[in-house]
Image 1 (cartoon, one colour):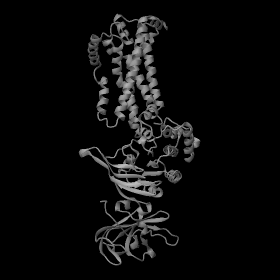
Image 2 (image 1 turned 45 degrees about the horizontal axis):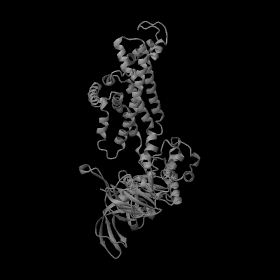
Image 3 (image 1 turned 30 degrees about the vertical axis):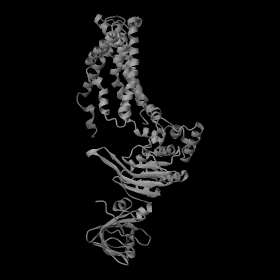
Image 4 (image 1 turned 90 degrees about the vertical axis):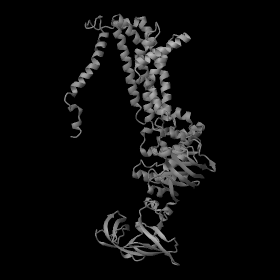
Length: 360
Length: 270
């Protein structure tokens, strides 16, 4: 539905020029909950502002339903924004804020009143309709900002880190609330965040960005299971990286050699021979009695952090490399706690992923 | 303990210096106000409380016409200055890609930097040329001059307010389908209003108070309140001058207090 075609955004010129977006090119479909995820300065907010119309791309085009909108001003785009600090109008009431977009569109008074009521009902703020904005809590302001942006029934709702100012409990509640709103309204949501957990919990698809480039676009599960490169892997979840080498390909699969750990066959996979980076998630490494197949390793326990459902452990190998483990705590197998003790681990071949190395 | 060592009250002699400063600032004013209520006419000799000199001042037709001219000039000049200042402030803080913004801000503040006597001379020359060419000799010159030197005073609070204001509010309005005019009318102006009012009142007080430029460019027979008072001094003081000064003081104080109240009350919620 919305297509971003080779978007580039450069600020300044000459030696001081800074490119915030490099050839960003993807599509978002109707009724999707799409998230732009990345560390601060990765270009996610700039991209959002390009879609909203606050920034004009230096090159490339934004298409909405097949029509180019790159040069339309924000007030001509059927796109509404929930701002990071909400940007509610302080001199208006709750209802006045929600009515603003409809009034700008010149809707008749009756329709505006009915729609404002409907929207405030949707975000459970109807009882506070005549309050001034200054009298609201952060969570309430958040709801008003949502109602205000949804009221004109935009084709796309843009959300710029809208939950970052809320405390943890309220944030979790609003995550559920946002999913519900998206489901009920059927509007495409484009959500910007630097919080990978938040992105995983809510999104249909996630675009992971860094340095103005999109590294990978995938569903939360695919992003976690099959990260394209080491940056995506380390940004989404915890990771162990091993410099490794593909030795050969046989009928069985590709033979991978990890210095200090050993050799393993990746069944059914074929890869070009040469240097690669292998990724293993800490929770995929087995310990104790179940450490029986794949690469079987021994190391010294450096530290162990008990987290309730799991224990986070760091094990140092004989050749010096540290490996992170996330061991599930079960009733019959107490986790290792004694620092200095020897730990037996195994890495099942199926848990090994080869990723592109892009981070220095 | 740490913050105590920074307590200004513990610096030896600070209290005394402060008291002296206040004395220098306010004793002359207290004397002026006190003697405006004197029954007698000589300074330094208190002859009892009376509103006699206020009566004299109110009945004086010269004072009446000077007051009328001062207020007329101040209202029109403050209005013109505020409109100009607001437009400049909007252009320099909101105009996208307005590269000369900083330069324009400095240029607008020119009357604060150029010695007033120089401005007065320059205006005198300019207006003499215009007068020769057109023959016009009305209050227009006073109004034009006052408008010009009042602009920076109206500009200051408006620009400060615009710089403090969250530009996301205007972005939000644009995002919600408001065009530039609707955004200005429904979001920018309502939030800017207290600062515009403060700018107007500040300009009004500055204009009301001006003596130097007015003295240079007023035409024969024109007297603003300050130039009238100056003229009276040359003839020897009568106590009705104290009464007029006291009223001017009261009006200025009231307006400045009002500016303060307006801008403080509207602060939360920005």
